[in-house]
Length: 228
Image 1 (tube, rainbow, N blue to C red):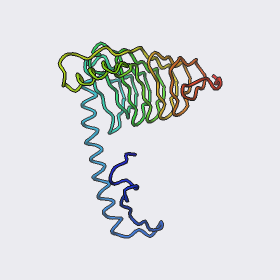
Image 2 (cartoon, one colour):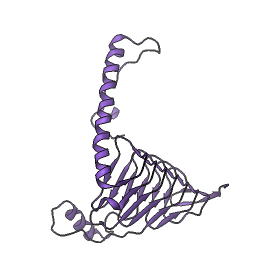
Image 3 (cartoon, rainbow, N blue to C red):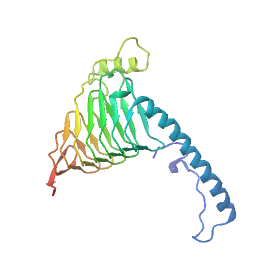
Image 4 (cartoon, rainbow, N blue to C red):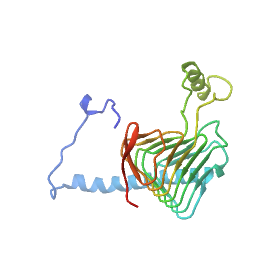
């Protein structure tokens, strides 16, 4: 949750609650009206996001997106492919300067709220994988590690320097079928998650994970084998 001038540390406002069953009309009627407004706002967000996905990705049958989902593709729409029955509530992104990258999501994959999948080379997610909320999947370093080059790359991204982006280290990610990635985990470049693997919440995966194993920690390590 963001910390700003309305945060509790800054004496943020609070409102009184009454016990269950004792709601007054001044709460009940405005609440119904506001809920309807919020419903239409969610639907408006969905319409904008749906148009974005349909323009910038190839969509399978029966896919669903959340109102805060987004798809950003700097190349042809064919480089992002969603299989049948995908549910996406997060952000799929082909980064600037990576128009030949490939992001492929298999059938019946779930991608939760606040997920970011950043692709500059290749990200493949196998069918029936589950990606919990807040997961970050990056097949790239985002910026050069050298400080001077990072500065130049950042200014080029902002359009304050001419020319194309500097080279960023990248390597493919492959997530096997039936993998489960717990909330707020990070999957870094050049990683393969074997079929049926489980990544514990808030783990940082920097190396390959064998099939049917549970990994946890930063950096993630094998905790145990899983039945299959």
